[in-house]
Image 1: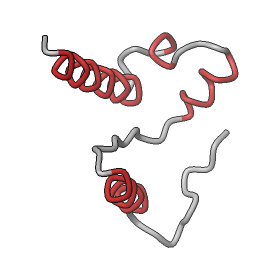
Image 2: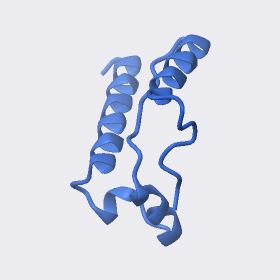
Image 3: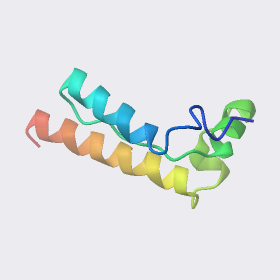
Image 4: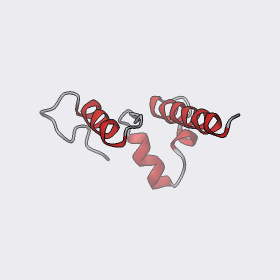
Length: 78
């Protein structure tokens, strides 16, 4: 299983990393919540959405996918 906190002394390190990545790449980054389901999906060789489509992490991945598809369609002029 994954450790819940990589840097236990930092409260909101995920947002800090997100902001740094966005600054370096000049592009929006997305946060996916921590979940053991991600680890489980890798072990089982299945997408996390197939393990539990109603979980927070599955919904977060779907939200990212929908946004990326919208961006792609907008770039293609659809």
